Length: 355
Image (cartoon, rainbow, N blue to C red; front, side, top):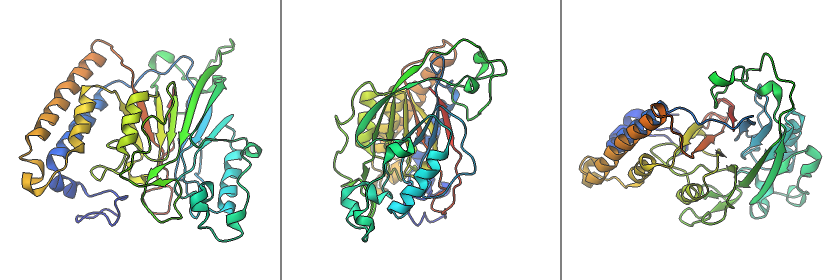
């Protein structure tokens, strides 16, 4: 629960007042950057688009509805206790969904999937066999990749191509689909579950938070990256920043079209990373340490310079995008967590992205 004096957990949202009082200039930087990003047009998907349905952090709970799509991706934390019975029950539910392609990675609560955390389970759970993923028609990715040949579904095409919103959560259908077969699309997906340490030994896939678990670990040519943790400074619960800065650096190197994550429930949502000078200044500014010596950043000249660069280059990006129609390579990041904070109830909407 949010309070004036701060959340009881860093995974909860901080009150707006406390956020501003603790880091006022960074709050201005954060708000300015996101307003300028909102003014840009959404990136255009390929033609025909492939519809990706993104979920994460369901923690044994089943959403009331899941939108149609070509690929369903679950970015981890299917369970609470990580037992084989919990995992089997949730995989059975996933297998019942109509999506032709289903991808799953593990999260820190999925204890059975990591040999280190599996040792904390009581017998007989500790010795239980791992899931037979093929029996559920699910592709499980753990530091691995898969290339799918996807036949886009006529029924999922936007009603009017010239006026469609490429990243809308709408599940509208074409009123007059063409009878010409759509060519299949080839998409390469990679999944990696590791997270900075945040809990007991029963939590899976943890590594010491100060260590780099990402640099040069991801292959190039990835279309869709799936991780459990978000990257630093993006959908990771500003201003507490629970994302991984080494993942952000690796993300900048490979620049996938779509990055799906979860883990930080309070960061649920989507954001477009344009990899431009405005984003670079934004990340530098949020990465600076603020202290009482600089009046929480008021006297930090570097922060004000970062803010100025965010506004300047952000406006340049808006003009380039809206006036000149320019579109640079970008990455759509989706924090697909469905759990509403630490409430124990699903409270976030399912994210749908066309690529």
